Image (cartoon, rainbow, N blue to C red):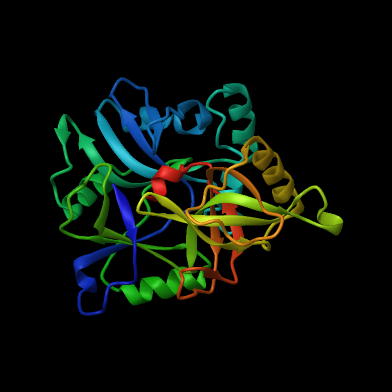
Length: 310
């Protein structure tokens, strides 16, 4: 079940919602058959169990009860905040168990659990959020690499101030009566980000000059609407040298002669790529045409595919 981007519920209705901190990590479903094993699957269904060996003891801690739990795998910074850039060092290692084990010692992962979908032979998806939450909390899942963060009913404005002041990404507001809708981006779950952030698809780039010779000076990004990729602007700031270098390699592999945007943007020296790289950008506002004002690069999103943004 996915959340819909939106704004903080009004004070008059905030008591109808529970508020959870929005974690900045990799969404995961945890399958516990009750035989002392577990399997971790990414949002798209990929088996990523081997990438996070520190989660395996959760099966023993949980005991012999079969369950399916929903959560977010994160890597925490020095202040205990989820840091996606740190987590990226752990992602994509499911095919390299030995490397994953080494990285677990350097960059520990932590599983934040927030929902129970199946428990003791019973499918819980038709239960309201409040009942699922009680069942989850009653499991008492707190361990060295997993926990069940608190949810607060009502008090949305105070929760918002807390995440803003703490430098966290935002809140998820969940309707107390909401059922669990697998695979659905539901309006009953609302994600409210502290900063204005857009998920975009890279459709081209402009070569850099001077010290950036051989590297992308700017990425040309777009957003999908009605099945088409519409140009949203040029992003040239917010990169580290390492990020530009990494992106240069990815753009080289994705090079194409055809412009992927619905309308060819008027950008001198533009080079086109297959629209398969997804990223996040911060921005201040939008033009009337929907272009991003003052966009700054935030991060690549290897956990998302362009089709996830439709």
